[in-house]
Length: 328
Ligand code: ASP
Image (cartoon, rainbow, N blue to C red; front, side, top):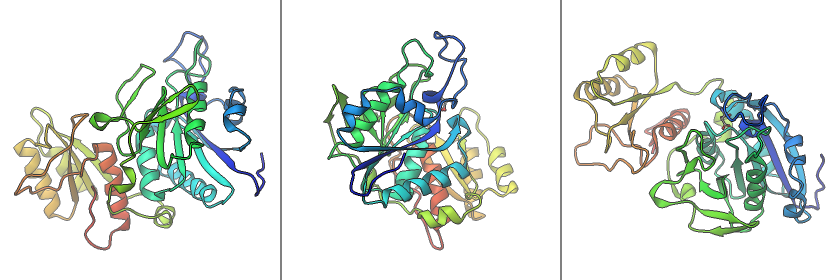
């Protein structure tokens, strides 16, 4: 589909996921193949989109067709570039991205960090394949378009099961239920009800200062800096960290227990890693709350980011860094 320069345009970028998935049986919600249906067909399967668009022109583009568990740096590079291309077009009002649920929060944080868009970029998804007796994808797509065209929307957002989340807070917390995402104790940005957005609070993503790489640095990097997550648990020791350092890891995120606490042996290995030049950041494996710094901390905390988002910020900080970088 082509867009006219004098029209307001909404662009839907397809990347795959369960929303584009197909199963052999209508009752099968787990044994399906993700990423089978093209974005054009997804859009066509939601006739009420015509009303929601309210005269806005719709453009679709298939950027990738993958299960988001396999999300790669290459797809992220392409997606960021296509988003930037459309966002700089004055005729484009907003973007919607169809995406798998598994790594949606990571893509949301990556795009927010790299693009920091003023226009809305709304990710949406589904927990059931398109072939389900009652699929959730069509309603999610319709809701995402409603949010994307709302005058108060901005930055990278996620819409699932009628709830609007910001890129900073969104987290998949459910492996099966349709309402699979949560924004933690600060709550969601809003809800979509009967084709209208009821805003509940502001997105925190834009104000979350951290060192990040721009689109050019991302585009130029054949591979991102190697950053791994190690988790604290009963009996955690430093062998994994030592092995990663020997193998050339550039950054480590420690998913600590509680307030980022670490087994003494794991902490000792992380300090050795830090002394050898590896960047280390401490997050919490708790799915809610954040690591609060205490005087004398020897490992910096993730400034409220979950381990997977702290990993992205650390990758981007390393990519950008020619001086000290703050992953949080
Ligand atoms: N594995 C799928 C994906 O992330 C799950 C989903 O979309 O719900 O693409």
